[in-house]
Length: 319
Image (cartoon, rainbow, N blue to C red; front, side, top):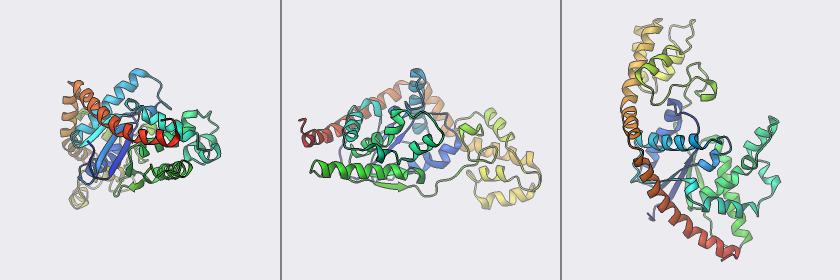
């Protein structure tokens, strides 16, 4: 699957149940980018990264499969991308170790994740401390030109660039391409049912593949502000599936009728999510589909990574 298009790579950790905040906040834009035809796209399930917070084998297997199913359900074509598990490509951890040997601890101590954990007086695992270098290996292994990230992850791309430059300088080579971050436009901050940012940790989510009954329970539980004629939390979620031009007269017509407006939101959400939910339920019936996709991705990713590692091993003198 080698081609001349610039490489775009994205990794997704298989942690947590997916909700509409994940979809409208990033997943939909990612799939649009992958389908643009401008890039050779690689997407990997970042299961080794997930080990920092998930140490349950059955949960890891289940959530990995669910993540693959979710991306297929929302429209990702596995024939247009290389979709694989990070753990299926040994070069990720091999290259990370090589980067370890040229990286100082003070440099890694500047990472946001380390600083946050240190500020909270947490016992910090080596995996958390070393996270930026494994991510650098993820990116540099495939000569990625573009890495779609949120603004809060831009530092990871800076770490990858610094590491590429240091390796090239240390081993007098031009092996690694310097990647560029791609800050996705129109990334929505989706409000939860309590008005805060939708997050599983806040317990305020609407599941992405919720049944009609689950949607009803979640939407009816949305916190409303009794001081206004328009329930703002309901309206902001409603705007994800219908335009303001459609909603404004509707909300004016039903001023103060919060129950009616919530019922309208339930129906619109259900109509929007139903095709994706149906596809997801269909995929659940045949897990071999996900296994076949990941096996195909494993072969392609290993071929690409091994070509790069042959150059790396020669440069450092072990081959």
